[in-house]
Image (cartoon, rainbow, N blue to C red; front, side, top):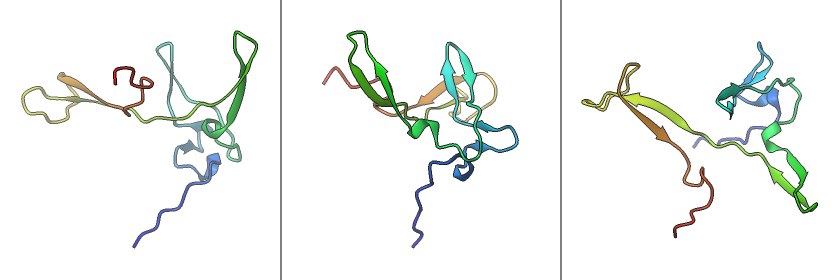
Length: 104
C-alpha cells in the first residue's frame, strides 16, 4: 500500500515552488490582482508561519494565513462538459471559505 509523506514546508520541497521564476504558485487575490509571492528555495512556507498583530483595542492576536483551494471552470450549458468558450461558470470551494456558518 502506498504511504504518502507530508511535504516539508520549505519552498524547494514544495510542488508549488517555481524555481525558474523564484515564485510561490499559490495565487493571492488582492483587490482584483493575482499575486505570487517571491521566494527563495530555502524559505519556510509563508502560509505555515504564525503571525502576531495588534487589534484596535491594543490586544495581541496570533494567526496563520492559511491556504484554501478554490477551483473555477466553465461548462457548456447544454452538455455540462468543460469548455474554453462561453458557458456556465462553476466554482468549487471549502464549506468554511466564507467563514463560519451563521445560519445553523
